[in-house]
Amino acid sequence: AYAGKRNYFVEKIFSGLLEIGDPNGELSDYLNAYRARFDREGVSVNPEDVPAKIHTIRHDPHDRWKVGAKIHPVIGNRTKRQFQFAPTMEVVAIQEIEIRYFGSVPEIIIDGRVGVSHREFARNDGFDSLSQFLAWFREDTKPKTKIIHWTGFKY
Image 1: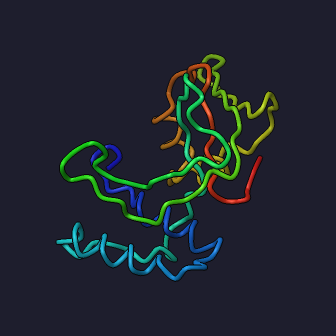
Image 2: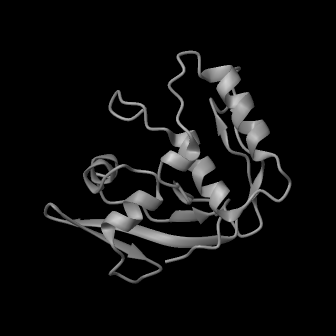
């Protein structure tokens, strides 16, 4: 949830996975298992109806994330309710990111370059709006922060 509002994180990741295909035919099994376990109120949405989350941002001071590393998409990590909601994915690209504020004006710097569309970036990371993204990342990012890609898309 984001600010007390459901963010459809799982469905957004599914939407992105559907865009790159389902060669093993497992996505529907994972989505059905997720809904059976967590959608008690029937508020789930179809992944096709939400924007795709195609990457994530992680602070990585020990360089854990590298191309070829496995991503286990889970919710409730390291708890007794841990649940893997999608197939294990492979990291296909890594990019360094900095978000720097100059007063109240943010700048997104990817691999040392500026100029990426803030709105596009926020949407690709699963936020519903630029303001929501900026509220989440309201301070400069720490050194060694990375964009972890599981699709072929890069900035």
